Image 1 (cartoon, rainbow, N blue to C red):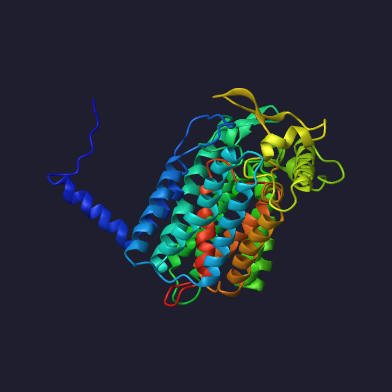
Image 2 (image 1 turned 30 degrees about the vertical axis):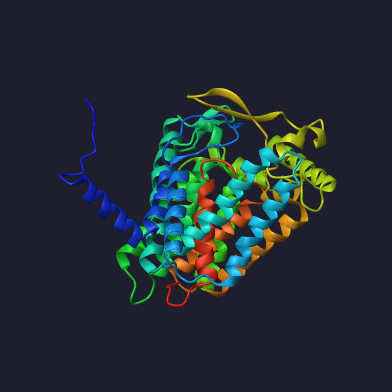
Length: 441
């Protein structure tokens, strides 16, 4: 039986109404970008030059709509400082591409960097016109996290997830074993967004039902985050939650720390997560310098590789996407050829290590000193701005999400299905850091 899209007796009119709705509230496209990350993409060739997902298409539609608004003179005010920060990213990527060891390959990297760090964040920034827009986007983060959290929890409980210590118990959501960090990223974002929204509803004018729902969502998401076995996501979420709570209420932060410890006891002791390897995984965090496991050792070697590439190209770097071409000539012999990935769908595979797994080292090696200065200005400018202008739930969420990204970039970089979510976070942070006159924070 064929399925058809019923637009009623006047499809042109229906499409016109839909277009008018998007023009009136472009944040719908930003929310769609977040939700479409959950659409399964199938197992893909991780070495391919370009991956285009449904979420990427939605983000590009947002950029196109922003361009139309720009031509019509309907964009909200964006201060010169924000324009300068985004412009520096474009300039550094352009300089690196022109001086690249392989300009043709670097050109695709230039386009991707511009999309992730400039165009989509600017689109989200322009789409955030009032408090409803902010709630809509944050709500999409929570909804996406709940979808992935339910799938991930089911995978752990039914032993149908990715392989971890030889057992199919690692929660990966709809992303599969080849995108092992994606579910934990989505769940982390949703947990922080839910917590910030709940904190924003405190006080006499707050919505009690929404506050309770968001606290409940954050509590539930702690479970799939735990069984993702992602040390990086745990660390980033803990740091972001601490910044969020301290900025909201220092006394609340202390109470939350006590409750968090109690929750860990319940999860590990009461629900038996300790037997599944969570406690061992937590314990391994403290040994990453004294006795690193293979994955941590490989990261250290990749960081050293990036540093050696930068030493050969100190000013403008080797060019976007050049790391993977220069890796073998600069890496130590002990570096693994790839990381193991296995689940019921793909069986066992070796996933090549094509980046340094550290965004700062990636920028340094591929865009040199010019690039690292530009990205440092963007990140610190947004972070300090969010610290100053984050009194309410939406502003707190932007601060927490940006903190998560900046901490995660210490041991991860862009790549994979959830990369576009970084763009949405940067857009939220830009609106909070430099709020336009008349915009809600």
